[in-house]
Length: 256
Ligand SMILES: [Zn+2]
Ligand SMILES: [Zn+2]
Image 1 (spheres, helix red, strand yellow):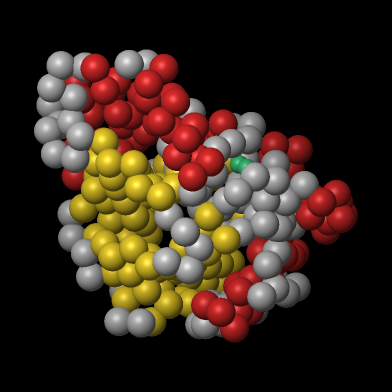
Image 2 (cartoon, rainbow, N blue to C red):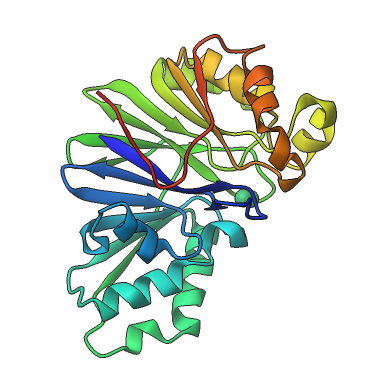
């Protein structure tokens, strides 16, 4: 499996990065997590044919995670897609997604490919190729789902979406090699951050520590901290002793 960030910003786009969105790729097929701006072009820039997307997961209905969906679907249709696309999400996020699709009358386009809206529920497992995605309820201001990717029952990757720190996840999920966790701010505003359903860099480190991860990727940074991202790595290192990375946009990361 390999993955790439189409963007790593929080709600306001940082210079050089779109809003948070992640592509998972396995055997030439893709699963896109949230949809920011220009997703179709960014997939092509990565050398990934958008027609090879099998599914799109909308982690929650906040605008920075869903606004690009109608344009992505429209461009796939223009490029001649015929095979179905699964859109995954909690009921509230799926409702927003369906309304966006209908607002632009996409289902009425001539020859529009089938859209399969499929509700996910925390604790359920979704099979994708030889991987299992276990949906995880996160702590945010609206219903939000994260997920753990398992291969042969081994935790490979955990993606937090937008959330405050969830201390109960360690025993539930077990060891997981890569943790991708939001880090909106630093501990200097920790209480305010957590009260809004977000995490600090130290919180992200706590989650990676709880999951006995090898590598932690931080993302979903608040724009106030744009020039201080190096401090995020230092702060996360106070709670987690593995590798800590700031993602590069449109760069493949391969899991060996
Ligand atoms: Zn967000
Ligand atoms: Zn959010």
